[in-house]
Image 1 (cartoon, rainbow, N blue to C red):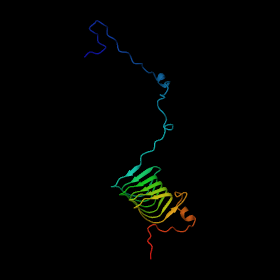
Image 2: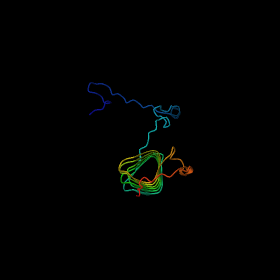
Image 3: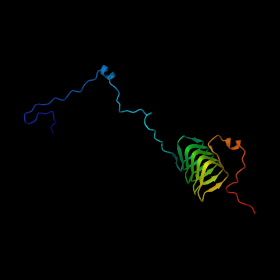
Image 4: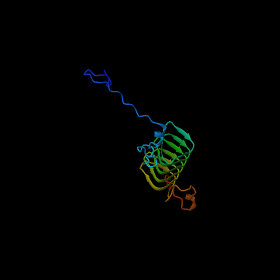
Length: 175
């Protein structure tokens, strides 16, 4: 009800408010900057979250990032990323190149990756050039598989050294 600056009932005197210090132009320039702020370069860098292309999205064109991409929709074009995840309902028509490729959906085109994983729901129609590969039971794959130490190297490196062609994985034997 009463503020502290009013006179109390016991006969005390009123306490004046403390004046705020005023800054002159000279005192403003001589102040040191706060040491609470750390420059961004010394702070640890956090990895940004994966870019997610939703199931109702269709992209016609190439995608390139140093980060991660999760495809849930349709892409007609080449994709280059650090980690590429193709969702179960997704379709990619083009070359997929990434350090890590996880295929749950459909790819029509070449796949190049250091680590390639086809899950049981994967459908791949194209060649796979890899350093390591894992194909789960139930995955559908039509094409050839070729191991290279550096599968992300230029596209022409696969044909630079002639090697015997790998038999298509989905080939059927004729009797």
